[in-house]
Image 1 (cartoon, rainbow, N blue to C red):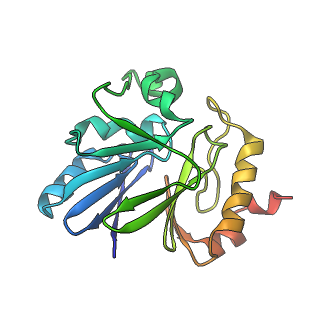
Image 2: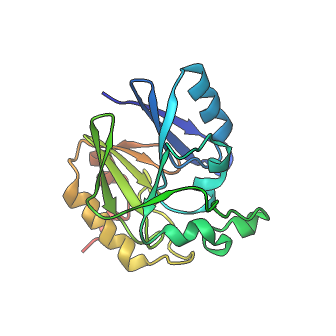
Length: 210
């Protein structure tokens, strides 16, 4: 059984998630929470073995370089999002006057829709959810769903940034609604989470689906 820990930054209200099992750790979206992640890993004697980016925006990747990344750590992003990690104009770090360009020494593994990642004999399924960006993903673990910036508790991610597409994000919402059990717990990239059943009722964007 995986233990899930949320780190919420006051800066942009961005969430990072740390999954742990058997003293091994997986981090989702190391944005503005790097210091807390490192302290947690050290305090609980956890070894980081995997990082997954739900998408390539600066607020979700900023503190990656603070982590102890060697060739034993697997780093994942969707195949259509890979270029975000090397282009500050796409990942928006240029807007913060701090260009983020992933080191060529980091071995990046590209994800596809439906791919399953094994984490200490636990299966994490990748679901491609374009709209906020072209390569945005969600991550499904049993009845836990990490939605990135595609779905928030009472809203959705912006579609007016590079590679965003409003038509595609509505298609992604339909995919979420049809693919996930309604009692799934949603862990969004910003703000609070909740049960999908509740989100379907109160999130106004679902009422706009055809």
